[in-house]
Amino acid sequence: MHPFSYTRVSDTAEALSAARRGGRYIAGGTTLVDLMRETVERPRTLVDISTLPLREVTVTASGGLRIGALVRMSEAAAHPLVRRTYPVIAQALELSASAQLRNMATIGGNIMQRTRCTYFRDVTAACNKRDPGSGCAAREGFNRTHAILGTSDDCVATHPSDVAVAFAALEASVHLLGPDGERAVAFADFLLRPGSTPNREQALRPGELITAVEIPSLPRPLKSGYLKVRDRQSYEFALTSAAVALHIQGGVIREARVAAGGVGTVPWKLTAVEQALLGKRSSQTLWREAAERAADGARPLQHNRFKVELLKRTVERQLRVVGGTR
Ligand code: SF4
Image (tube, helix red, strand yellow):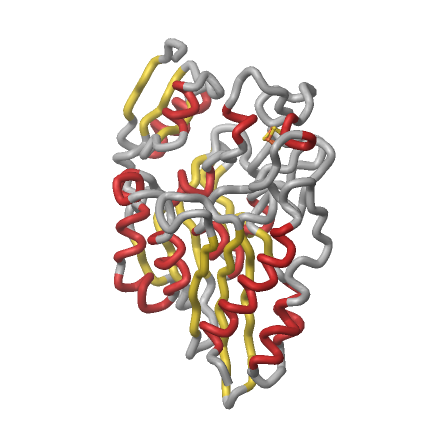
């Protein structure tokens, strides 16, 4: 590990000031400290923001949900408001990481976490994300767990978060505080596809701090849930996953929110699936036909072709679970 200095701040003004001097925010530290040990990340100054007052879950004026950036994953998963209004968020959190990690990691840190591509974490391997211009060892290497959607010639790594898939499905927004004040960014615009700059992963301006994630109000009754398919049942990242939220009235689907994880370079909103569902009467046939659109545009690699069919089946199964089997 490289030498670094550490400072703890007690308010947001102090945090922004420390960031302006080159500091790097840390809260739970469950990703960053690992990466520092592996020398993938080498920040010179860590700014500990873990005691800032960003730890509340509240209902917004428009009836949506606001989750403070420093709410722990386990706190959010157990929160009655989250469980009652958006079970898909609670389920995605409960299926993530381990109990110990969920007790430390924060919502803000979770969406900021970096890829689990093994070549990214191996400092001897070529990796455009870690070392721009060096190449991508995964493209011709062992790429079974890599992305099939949103890839580029320069990077094919998946985004590892589960709860980010739920946020993408629900069309959340990320609230930021920076030197120029506050702003909100649509979740779909916050995490960036790799393109030719895979080292740039979020639409953050220098020094900006995530303060909260907001989920808009959706028509009720709303049924939602998260399905994660992985090589083992615990402490493992998704091969494929599906976050589904449906508003069904009289058997007809009036609102549909669907996104996939484990398959995209960012949490992947399944717009074609949503469109295939809207205004239709729920049925087994509809779930199957809509799920057929889940892998539209997929570009599988040598070792991950199985993800195309697995994604369709994951989405179909979760549509059936959330929407019922009529
Ligand atoms: Fe690096 Fe992305 Fe290639 Fe993995 S897939 S080696 S993160 S450039």
